[in-house]
Length: 319
Image (cartoon, rainbow, N blue to C red; front, side, top):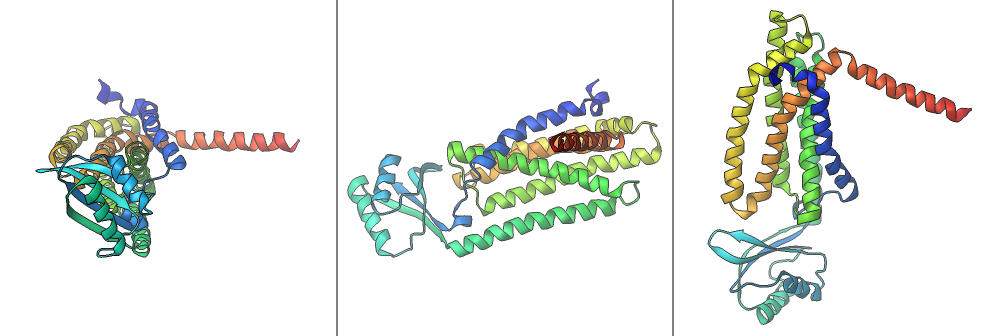
């Protein structure tokens, strides 16, 4: 059965993770993330027109008033058709620029209703960015210390924490990479809600990993098998159904929110959905497999080969 050989197929699971992560990493390096106004500063403006309007026409009107770097997209709101969402540099409420743009919209596109306008200053956006990074770093350090304390009675207490952090980093990279690609392809932006989703994903991923690790620790104490790999396989088989049931419950709820919820929370829900699926995968197929690879000495041998090749290349270059 597959459950009897999960750890034996660890390189397959690692390869699948790389296939998912590498395109996103390339996108992050080339395109980065499309930052929303929460981080860059600016204005998000939602308008409902009396009839359908062309996005390009809205964009050209804004460009005529000096707002060239804008994101204009139609959004779906329940009971509100013909809604256009505009992300642009800061536009102050009651300013002459706003009045001029509104007059131009009315003369060229017809009457409209302003649904919302939210502005964030550039200095506030910079502060939010710094706090978001700090929150993620602090959460990671706290998780490492907690797991090291929780597994203090094992032979390698820091190993469990590091493996959990690697699995957590896997989930963060999956979410960031996919959103980088979506930002390039579909103009998806990240905002403060995205950071909330990322922190939630981190918590869920580590929770799932700890469940598996705790069962591994129990089975090691009971000496159910002389082989560490067999202990991990048994522990995964015992926790797999619980992990999948918990994750599927959350996934179905998030799918319903994504399909039928409001447009303003779609990107937040999508980040959660991707992260929960990735977190379930990493806790089963990455974190525990890394423990096996370490216990079998495979990670040490891998780094020795890398170090040996680097030293060989340096020696050959010096000749």
